[in-house]
Image 1 (cartoon, rainbow, N blue to C red):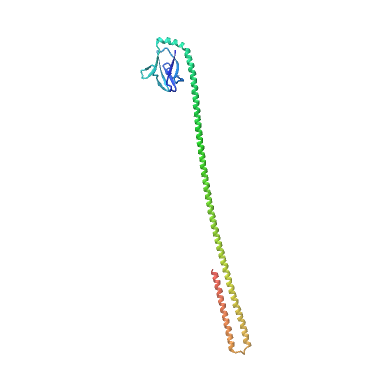
Image 2: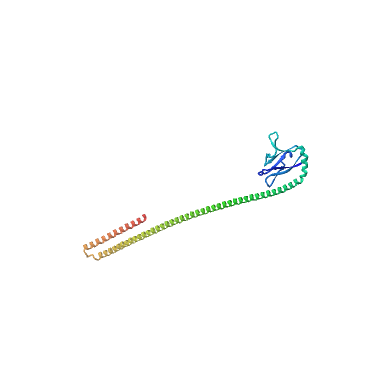
Length: 290
């Protein structure tokens, strides 16, 4: 066995493996990235083979190192290879023991560099994780603020709609109240007119009754006058009869004139009474008609 250092100088790679006939192409040997960006690893190779065939797997892609020897496997595939001459096998084996300390120091240095690189990568990952969480937190706070702003605007809109409805309700009630007051005034005005009309009719009726009473009183007085006239006529007849008996000596002419006067007075009194009765009947008929 002897140690051989594999190198890949493309610093832009992420992961680099070396694999070949020495590990049955199992891709188990990952090269370590160095501070200068190259990838390196010392691997023990067997000395019982004449040729070591190998290839690099860079970020999942099978590639070869164009600076190293290349051969075709007869199937269209190109590989790198390492020749081990028979005459040099003993030298290689002997050189392995002489270089053990040196390789050990190199391995320790590489382990140190590996740990530093791992620490750096770890810190970088932690920083990236911190930044990611910070961005997530900022995004969460932003969304929370947007949601709060949305809720605030929604509440403002609800409050505005509520006030608008309250104002509309107030205006509606105010209009209803105005309409009610208007109708109430109209009703009061109507009742007032009806009351005035009623009072007016009542006064007219009272005036009418008053006039009727006055007319009746007047007719009654006239009737009394007629009665008085008839009574006086009766008295006059009695006096006349008395005079006729006591004064038989007077002339026929004077007696005849006096009798004619009395007859005329009686006739006129009768006519007055008849007229008065007709007037009273007409007044009563007119009253019933109304």
